Image: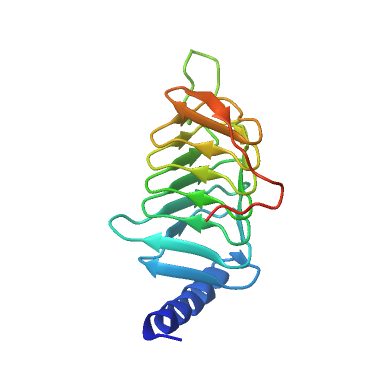
Amino acid sequence: MDIYRVRRYIKGKIIAFAWKAKGVEIQDRISVLGVSPHIAGKGTIKLGSLVSFRGFGSRSWFHVGADATFSIGSKSFINSGVMVDACSAVSIGKNCLIGDCVVIQDSNYHEIDEGSGVKTKPVSIGNNVWIGRNSIILPGVEIGDHSVIGAGSVVTRSVPPRSLVAGNPARIIREVVAAEDYIRH
């Protein structure tokens, strides 16, 4: 094992210990390369086995409200500058790749029309999903397994499984060919 893997392993252990002290549930171990994400709020955070975080250039930020949950499935990768804000629930499946500076929010935080209230709806991201850099995932969106979100997309509606979507607002471009057991690398 080379020295960099040893350092990353030790750093992951130290960060996991600190996060567990804050109440974060970690199934097995995590990997952190660069600066670890900032965790705020009093909600529930669950991390699957071998979740990886990259923190170069900008730090990721996760806020989970008091009655909210945020979960990341096993072997998922969260890149630099990702912001997740959960007022209700945000779930990311297994084997997902989340690009730099992605924003995932389950609330609009302010009413748009007088008396309309604040919109809060859970966000669910399936397994083996790739979300490209600078994409925004908005409240109530469900992204199906094996889907790809093009860089810079604003996802306002749910995405069927095995779909490539892109744009603002994001639209289906084509179907993604992927066997059920396929894992994107």
